[in-house]
Structure formats: structure tokens, C-alpha cells
Length: 425
Image (tube, one colour):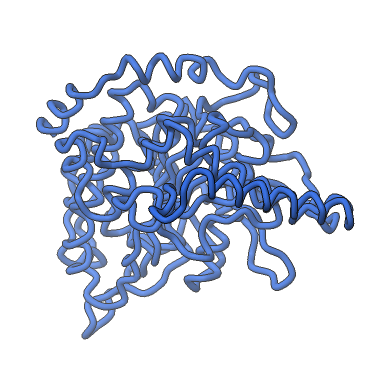
């Protein structure tokens, strides 16, 4: 952490503060679908959503049960937050837990990966006839973009059952990023295409679209297709394109986040949010630990600890933590029982943990409780829609407002979930 503190000294924070001063003042005039400013409990304008795909073990991470046989070799350590202990791998995060709220009483009714992942992202169970928007798409639809040049919604890693625009128009879909170290691919003209030839192609495309619309009337898909091209060209010509270039970041900062895809993806998320992107999801896979759970924890948790601690310190140093909500989520937990002969843990949707920090969240607390084995929620159960409603409420989104899909069906941002008021400062 000392290395991180020295690294942060290299950053020019004044430029960031000038850019974001207006954002720190709040939403201002609320668009349709946003709560009026006086009613807001949270202070978030953007979200960095870290998704642990596969079902992260709550017992080995944020809901340990010291002295119980369910822990295997996992040990617990105290933190700066009173009465909040966490897994021993989180030695960098432990001194920062006064900034973090642990939601220990998460509970889902979906115990399979695809269904659980979809439910966690949308608050709705999977249906064959419709695809539901995820929170980043709702935020794009209801709050708009902070920076009109950059997409408001970005997904780093992930799969088809993660971040999605659902039934919303295509401009609310996330911009997908594969390897964060590659930057935004295909953002520059090929060497074989001159500027003149490029403009000729764009003029020809615009003429074709105009002819199509004149013949068939205003078509949403055609309009969305044209808008996507216009936005892509605008970004290609913008200075904001450098936000995707991790090479522009000082090497000590890149090292502090961790050199793997997840760590560099989280650094990219910070850079994008700094430039006005509203919602960035970064997915880390490999948490499905049916076999050799403890070996997997030894491998994965130190890097998660490093990346998450670095993110919190970096956001705080830049003055961004107050209006950036950091979320760490997963589709379900793992069983207290350790599978004999495989040393693993199976799926366990009845009880698991998620984290919230920044964005008006009151840190240093554990919300809810599981029993002495981490098997059942015994205090203040939090459903998946409740958790997502809490994120939405932190952003000022009205979770009670009813929205209609293109087919006229009614939906809410978090499917009747209720925000958890006690989590906010």
C-alpha cells in the first residue's frame, strides 16, 4: 500500500477536479425516471461493477465463521470496521473496510450459473420471450450520458448473460471490451483507407439510409444502426479515445492494480469513469470451485485483494469515491459442506455476500447475518431485486416507476425490489 500511495502522487488530480466539479454538485434537473434531488439518499453518478462469475464462496471471503469446521484451512482476520472480519487473504482490504458495507444476507432463488447470472444482472428470471435490461442500460436510458462522446455503458469481459441492453434501444447496450490492455480495437482507419475514401463511404451509407427511411418510414432499427455509426465516428475523432489507452497510465499505477486482465480491466474502468462513462462492469471468471476450492482461493483472492484495495484508494485520492459506487457481486455462494475427495464447495444460492462502497454508502458495516455455518440467512434477508434496487437508488433512479417494453409490457428497474435505506450514510 505504501507503493500505491507513492504512485498516486504522480497523478495530476487538478485536471480531474476541473472536469468533474459539476458532477460533484449532483444531478441537477432530474430527467424522467430519476428521483428529485432532495429525495436522493445516495450520491452516486457512476458505477464500477465488479462481477465474480461462477459463484464466489462467501465463507472464504466476506462471511467467515472462525472456529467452525465449515472453514477448512481458511482463516479470518479483523478489519478496521468493528465486528467485521474477512478472509485472511484480504490483508490490503482489511484496513479499508471502514469504507465498505458487506451485505452478508444475500439470497437468490436461482442455483444454476446461467439463470443465476441473468437474475443477478436484471432482477428478473429468464423468459424465452423477452430479454431484460441490466442496470447499466437502465442508467443510460434514464439518466443519459455524462460525456456525449463516450458510451455511457461499457462491459469489460463478461458473456451473453451479463451486461445487456435487453429490450431497450441499441444505444443503451454496453460497449464490449475483451482484453483491456488492447484498448478500443478498430478505432483507427486501416492503412489502406484514406480519409477521403472513408468520407466517401460514410456519405454513401448516409444516402442509403435516407433512401430506406423515405421508402419505408422511420424504422427504429435503421435509426439505431445509423446512430451507432455516428457515435463510433465521433469517438474515433475525439481526444476521449485516449481513455481506453492503458499505456497512458503511469507504470506504478498499472502495477498497483495488478497486471492480469481483471486488474487492468478495473484500471480501465476507473479511467473511463473519470472521463464520464456512467456504468462499467468488469467480469472476473473462475469462481466455480466444485473442486479444490481452497487452492483456487489461494490463487484468486490475493489478486482480488490487491485490485479492490487499489481501486478504493485510487478513487478516494482522486476525489471520486463519494460519487462513484463500487459494487462487488456474484450469482450465489458456496456450500458450507466441503465435498469429500474433491475438497470443493457446491452451489449455494440460499446465502451469499456482496459488497458496496462509495456513492453515499455507509462503510464499516455488515448488513444482515447468516447462521453459524453460513448456510441460512437469519437476519435481514436481501433478495437480488432488493440489492439491485439499492444500487439504482444510490444513482437516483426511481425504482417504483413503471416502464413499458416495446410490446407494451410493464417493467420496473429492479422488479419491485426495495432499496435498503440502512446502507446509506
